[in-house]
Image 1 (tube, helix red, strand yellow):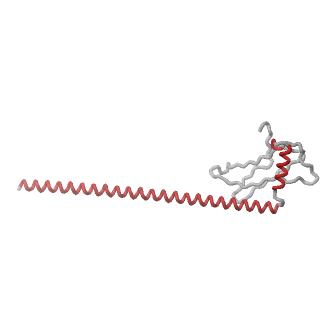
Image 2 (cartoon, helix red, strand yellow):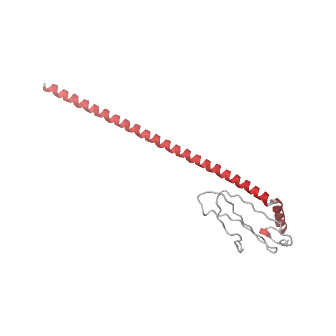
Length: 177
């Protein structure tokens, strides 16, 4: 944006539902700029996704100098950028074990929510299927009742015509006699 050059720092990866994608980017002591996280749903655009992610800044390795104090990270003024980085470091998990537990908990929670949403979707689909089946059965029943009424009306008309014909025959026979 604005003449900036995009550089792919971590290659894209396809991540299955039950797995976790990870990537790391290390900023050198004289680098500044923005890191943009991108999620792409092009493998399955017909299904929505819930993404659980965590990003943080870790303190530099001893012996390496930090980014220059005048670096303008993400368009923030230098004091704000330094404060944001410090807050991110303070709020980051203190160990890989703590991070693993937190991520596992978040993943488990996301899976539970996805399963609950899938179950609700299945239940809704079953309700819709049952309602459609009921409507079809009702329409079939009404069609059968209409056919029975039409058949009964036709039978009654036929009996009426037969009775009329019989009465005419009897009347003709009496006139001849």
